[in-house]
Length: 431
Image (cartoon, rainbow, N blue to C red; front, top):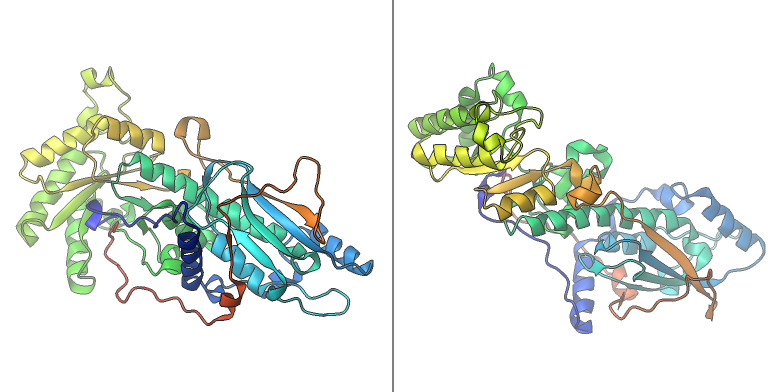
């Protein structure tokens, strides 16, 4: 969990809202930071291996009929949210165009125009997010792929943004890695960054933007020390001082369901062994099925709120205990079941929390109505013109969007490199 936890987060810089020149610059700076090689596209994508089969059959049918129409494809979202995945889609178009299915003739990106929103832009239902104009046979097979990219990335980015807004500037760590297939860790981590999260829990999650995974202690570490949270924390600190010098220590204190006792024991031991300020924080991750020992007899509090899991009364009592024990500098990090609704409650009630850790709910595993999060974020693509003539399904005609930025496709051919920071942060920080 977090180390510099507790002080700062690094939000994704939102793209400029209005100036066409500034938006053009922001889009192309983003593209330079995210070259096609970064996304490691499977070469089978260009063959249609990942697409719904009917798109391949459609391209083959058109080609078999000796047609090669230039279409305008309009892509729109179905929800309010934050768009992410745009750079990946553009690089996909750059590198994964098809060949003509019968002649083998390659198609080129110079045959296209692409207009798009920018990663981090707000997007509304039915607002045009991209306009792609080019030979349909060249990119018919990519529709499934680019819609899926936008859907997944925008879901995560939107949910993270809602959490960040609820947290009022306090640091949030994206802990979604354990809640889904390992193959989506890297793009999910990037989408979380677009949403504003400053830290991710795995190295893979930060790979596209040059960050390392953060975190300190899981319950398994305490178990390995016979359930002794003090011994585990001291051993972890010795290791970090010897091998990972810049990790700031945050101890996990709910293993025995007695967070006040264990937090004070850890704080005293750290103070005695390593000196004042050696313990940056404690993390509370109490199961939602348990009531902490400190609250078992709290009849008055029970009348005000539920006492299971991590709740305001427990955090307040822990803060009072740490302050009373002489450890006001030790922050309290909370995790387990947090959503925008729960975070907003904590912030409204001024619960003394230094930071939040959030996982599965950001991936759509939640009650969207009560939690304030989305369970899905769909995009749709429609042909709105063929060979320069308006042509579309009824109700799905061209919907111009003045915020779209035209991609300078000639610049995509220039060599670009991804340069991570000189010293990746392995500290467990939320910064």
